[in-house]
Length: 452
Image (cartoon, rainbow, N blue to C red; front, side, top):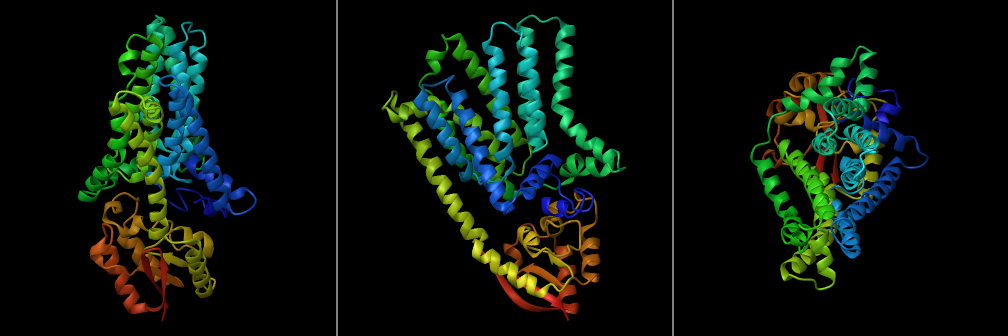
């Protein structure tokens, strides 16, 4: 998206996806930096993960001794790749913003004097506003933190007019980045395109059915070490008599609960959707992690902490190794790029199935604004892209792209295939195209076709 934006395409209009403009703007920045933009976003992802881990460590100090707080930060670093959030997924970039907002809200509850509450809340909600422009799922955590700020004002006996004024200010700051993006499109007469891509289309997407429930079971198993470590917290009882620690536990628990609600609400449950859970869960697990390294008591806390450390470390390594096996190596990518470039003779390259990263490497015309294959090749997306996928695929093939890429997997192995668009594709290939090569990326094989 950032690459096509840099070449003049307008997000949501000339090239379509349903992510906030801020995420595309972030990658547009990476694209503008000197050198390889892939390396740039990966370095930025490493820095962002480290920043979030430091905030996790700081928050965990409110619940656990320093050794547990440091281990909570380490668990966050290890667990992010374990849930396929390494380097570039959106939670990598918005988790530090939300965690820092949570720290500011916690500060507001720890200070007896509420003179700084308006300012702390304003900074926290500004951070939430920026996070929303990276991923709208942050709205759940943002609402929870906003309610906690209002509850702090209520607890301090702020009069209702003052409380209402603060609420308006904080809501305005949280919504300001999104309203600014909307205004930019409205001024171009494209308000509907912005609203549809950002808000409406996700509601029109069909549920995945059984595959989504299988993903939820897998993710529940993956998150179970966090649940055990939190359940066997050895300091919970001691915290009941400590007002400061008790408040911290309630604030951080509300944050974690909102993150869990946001995860459950969308219903598709891809592994990286668990990314926002990892910061608050790592914080709450810190007491058991502290018990893990010094032989603390009770034994349930000690062993649940060790289990979490081991599971996050091994999980991160296994998932990253699996990603290379499933999606391919840099060498495979460069071989694929060379093959495609040699056969795109100034025309268009169309992926009906495949990895959109190839579009940037080939640097050829894309014959559709629906460049992400799942928008046209899966039935769940059919009513949710603002166009009829069958009509769009027929139009693309009538224009005769120079190279067409199609998966060679059997239909039963394809993910939720749109049989209507796949039939149109197969008929067009049989009538007008000839297969000239095969391409492999990881465990996926693709047939490449050119016009007869």
